[in-house]
Image 1: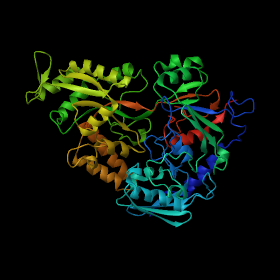
Image 2: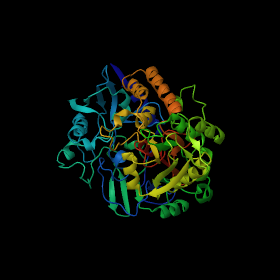
Image 3: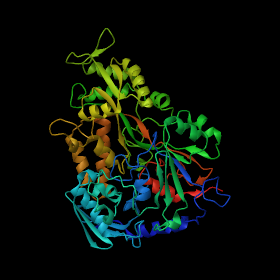
Image 4: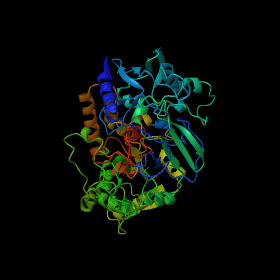
Length: 553
């Protein structure tokens, strides 16, 4: 057996907590920067909404931000920005030899916010719920059973080797058995009075504002200086106005001309940081001609001016993608050294030469035909209210006209876009892959045949329908090994497949949208101190951020 999270790591983390602890104070009232003895509230904009609906159910797709993380906590806190998961509700985790079971040793002295003791029965109940109610299994973990060995020890068993899913298992938020065992429908339950182990409880709720109040019985209460979190409802317009006016401490969203609108108003205290939070790609259906031809996908890549897309559509906020598709800087250490310095080229002449050689004939009207004689004229579907993607589609229309491919952008509703993307009933579209917790997560979502629909119907990942034996073999090699060198070799193989075969045409990094204002609170992550992804909707990174905040002044 190999302990994947050692007690030594846990002790080091506990020592770090003690070193960063500062005395709190005040009554949670509003006000300025804390020099008056009061602790100001922490005001957050995490998503745009005209109003809120009360829902603190961590399994719900419409759960309110803060529920996962601030109220319900995970066993370990994992972020792609940090190499090792940090012990949280669990102090230690150990896989068996083949990775089909993991045993957690839990932190002692933790209580639920209603005063009940937290123990292994709660962890076992949570994971067994995934078996009984599969829709609650948000990470699609192959759980077969979970058993409390004693009050601080729990064993979870799986139907396959789960080495690759260690972080996803650890990031699972735990719910109290004594509350949820009485819930008839765990998906429809809105959970107006949530009971969690986390640093906050619900303070108040109405449709325009909800607040979280500090949980004074929290197991690490001394490390949390924030007394109150406020989530005001904002439209896109009011978000920008409040950001500009300095009313928000921590926010996440696209802001046009952010230096002019936000930073220049108080450059000493205002900042933003947009590290790679995923990958945005041009996506074609690899099961349909002509897009099953790697030469065509390579030509689409050569004919794509990513720098123009980055500068015009994204205002330079996010860079062109790396050829491996991995979001940076989070996964820089996972790059194959042979590919680390790779970069995409924009070369219209090379794209046209490649298409000529592959039999895509240029017509007198400037539009090519496929070897089968079909005109290369395609609809590019994007959600009509995603302004940045609309601009990207217009740029691609202009760029691909230079290589004889006619692209017609078509804005559709978000719901229709999801439906056609998942069903594969598109000619071209844009899609994104989330950063996940490891590079394996990115490549699994991009290339795994496990998402293949038996009847050719809808899928929920691998939207380009790229099914490749070598990719599956590398994914399986990573998932079945607990050896870092073997896993890195599997990642190198996957990177080479992405570069050579282009299951999608990587375009730009999907930014982790995040702005901060240190006039009232200090300690936010940034490029110089990248201890977590900064977006206030990023779970569980938000726990690391709130722990690191101290009143300004």
